[in-house]
Image (cartoon, rainbow, N blue to C red; front, side, top):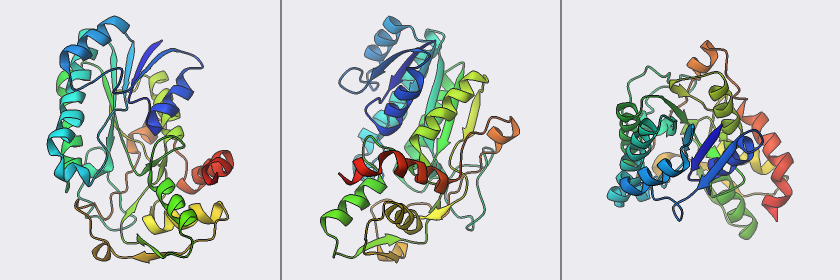
Length: 288
């Protein structure tokens, strides 16, 4: 198949490139190649490539920055998604769009989870823009897959684990406070790329939750990662109120992969198993 991957310089985009290049013809683009917020440019580019599938990994994901750069966030997360969806419909392509657990309010108790049919109620502008992006895809694409994922990390690009590791290595004596009362499912971008491939092969359509199995706090996540790397650390747990941020984050936004399981296509592993493999593959390079 002929596949167009947008946002290809990000962690999920890079892993999609790695997964799909083995068996498909792929075109990988980022902002310097294709500005998805420009409708005419998007239409012309998709018309030139004529892909069978568009995997839209492009997004404005800086949660706190979305609070002050709302027009930028809306332009990418809503208008960009709409432009991709319209072009997919025009050129008869399957539109695959990546969304987030932040579309939910996170008011469930730890251990409880959100399924695809739960009503979204985002707390932050990031969450609102991503929810509106989902609706843009549903309203403008004939064939689509929307994948809601959570706490994404990978080898390429920036993410929470890399930030904590960098701070720990550069300032080993400095205490680092990490929130211990927000819960989610850390998801390896490579695993998500494999799940996307499996859904395509099984002709999935509609909205799916696709995050790692199990859950933890941000503190648990960082501690497990650093200990697997055998890196001495000085991280300490704190509450959300002790670490205020511009954007309000959901306290417990655990996603249950109900549709994947019901359709017998769930490939997501427990978060600890994936962190183990991530460290095995990339640990030395991450430390270096």
